[in-house]
Image 1 (tube, rainbow, N blue to C red):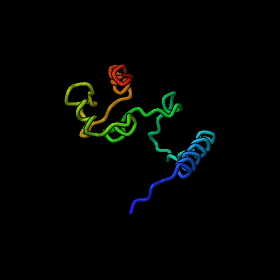
Image 2 (cartoon, rainbow, N blue to C red; image 1 turned 60 degrees about the vertical axis):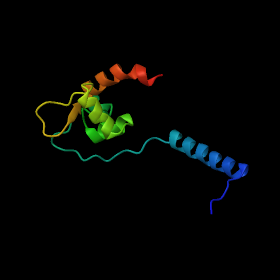
Image 3 (cartoon, helix red, strand yellow; image 1 turned 30 degrees about the vertical axis):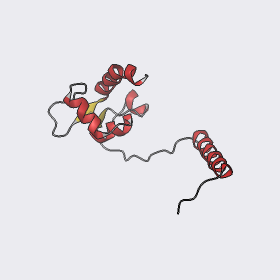
Image 4 (cartoon, rainbow, N blue to C red; image 1 turned 120 degrees about the horizontal axis):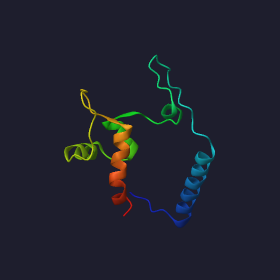
Length: 108
């Protein structure tokens, strides 16, 4: 049987959420221990933590979209994967171009 929340319950939940958000925003993000490979990328992009290439899943996650939406962008020509690869990969420049093209409609 479902339980109805009282105003006090809702207030307690909201206060706890605000408290958790404050804690997370005030603490520095956890450092991800990425293994160093022989092909490690160096330079300004790596220092800023920017990815140079995205997979469909990574791009969907980064843009908070579904993978279906990414594939739809590909099919209508708004997003072009890198040529010559077995799997679809997208350069950071292509992602930035897409965001510049689509961003005004997201602001509505």
